[in-house]
Length: 108
Image (tube, rainbow, N blue to C red; front, side, top):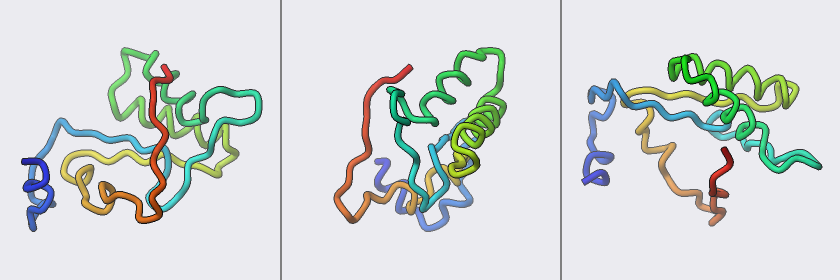
């Protein structure tokens, strides 16, 4: 069903007000790994810190995460927040052609 939905030619016209996706870096950029001596990446660290602020909205948390990641990485990495139909853009959901897989697992 999701596959059919993603092939919708007018995806930009679909209203998905509650959907938000926070990516560790901008489209086409590579996120940094954990620094030597660290167990989690800059994004994972900032994301966990952002989630600890339960009173914040999703957009506020995303802004905090972005600012923390940029500070930690000295502006070399900037997270990306997409909301609504933009979060389902097919180019962001297309598997990598080089066969690389994203690392997974819990970190918070």
